[in-house]
Length: 306
Image (cartoon, rainbow, N blue to C red; front, top):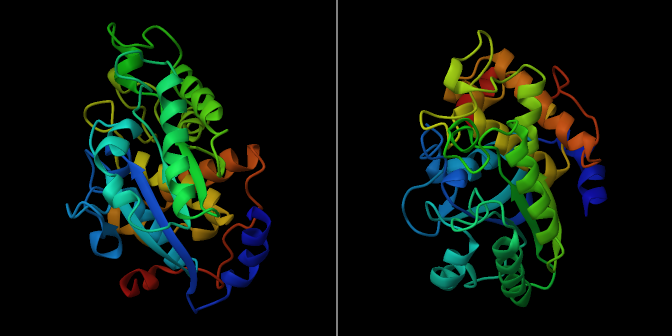
């Protein structure tokens, strides 16, 4: 499927006609709906919130990116704050199993298990349970697991589960857990959002420790609670999701990408975060280089038309 998306990418670059790409359901929590940022209710009218709470979130950013790329996905959101997949299995199957989905992006609780932070067992078990349900509704569903980021509060605070460890440690442990869970039926891969965050820090795009101040010229990927993402953090999350699901180079969106302008990111920040997303996906072989080409893709004037 990755190959088909990649082969189609070149045609989509110059196409002004949106092409139907099927349905995408996002199952998650506040890390999906954009808690603590302007992303939470961003373009909520472009996606369908199954809980009718008016959420736009990362799914709406994904929708915006795909529209700008000439793609047409029907995007749905099913989220609950502070939850893992166990909550959705116990409380939301009436919504989730109501119809067959073409693609599903899902993730669990940020520490993997409230009662045993860092323990992958619950994530592995609930991923399999959810995958079995999704496959029963559509045997061809593509499931993508999203590995989330290191939390500054869990790393730099004395009572944090990863206290005293490098900032990348939590993201690495989370990714390892999702790799274990990825053996579930129809799981096509793990979306490396947490590792993209780490890359942003190690390459000097983002600040690594918000508790000691933000270095000049760097973005803060966390919001005020040092737990959830800022607008920058959710923007990077959405770029990585966009790249993995479509096979398109996030850099192809360009410095004048519409949502960045609407959310207050400047061109330098947008370009830098797109580069981070591309580099992370490229490091795992999940993307074909196809950077922005002036005159072929976006211009700032297109933002008002979206």
